[in-house]
Length: 472
Image (tube, rainbow, N blue to C red; front, side, top):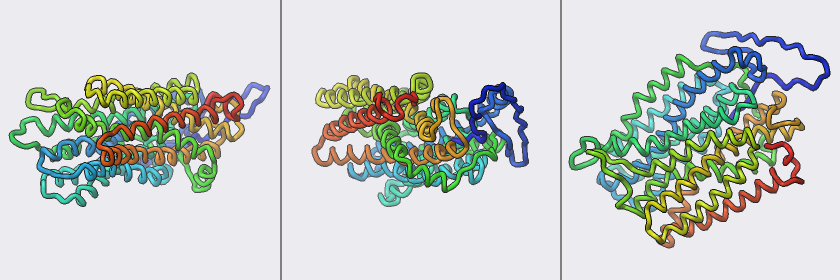
């Protein structure tokens, strides 16, 4: 991701500083020069309004990215009814392949905003969503489509996963350090909601008016008009910032920073858990509780799996806001503690075969993962500011070099964390294939969350830790 605010923090001084009002220059192609949200007068006068407009359309485009990214999580559950016969292992590959491709695409996507401009890349990245949407509509309409073709088309849905990196990168340039947690939380939550909406809308759309068979092709076709709207909105209302710069030296410096890898590990635990469980939740419910996998409403069917992604998405901005107020480390530790308890509760409920208890325990896990998403992501720019020697890194972003290194770290960490969306379904699939149960996988998840809690405590919260006093 990228988080560049072009002006450096002013050095301490005993004299009353002279504030020079920021003069924005608008150029053709909706380019803006002179953007400096750290200037409070500029921010209150005009910066907040411009940033808010860009944030709204960024959220909409990223929302559709998550919709497309998670289409296969709900489509695979309906493939047997549509005439497809894939093995359990093949089904888990169809679920996890979009996350594998999406996580990988986040690396190049992180650098697209500085290269093309936030507005321009939003138009392009939204347009790319047409490819997996239309391809899905075509291939699921024919039960004779080979598994290899289905797997390739599922991989194309990774375009939607890549959108997160460029979208978050763009928004970090627009907002001051003191408001990044809330802005990034809203942007991410709005995107994450796409997973819930896909899992809610698709079962309804494909069953309304259906006679003997599902109209599964609608799972792809219904999103095309919205993608076109997102492209138009980005073209008409978003802006490019000339101050949004990134360089390979900044990325290389970020890669050499040990805290990048520690924060990436934490983000695998939070965001990776959210997207991994969100993608596999419909499959888990269908396997464990086939009688409760969906409810008929009129001529439509509603899958309850959307509740997990919905709850986790709504919790994310509050994780960012809590981190703004109390510090990211303490909120992240709390999230991992609750995630461990939630996974333990799910493990205990599996033998009971009680759907509502299972659902409640899993929703607790989703809430904690969502909060952890926001708080961990909020920690990233603060950690890099603190590592540069800046005091009060929780509220100040440091000089331009520090901001650009943090920007690169945001993108890299978001990419690494997204691999959790591939790993979690694969672990669950292996557990089921080897033992006929998901219990072994949840035992592993509990152990992982305990380890991540300990890492956060020892590195970022413990009194003698080098960064503990920064309220990261």
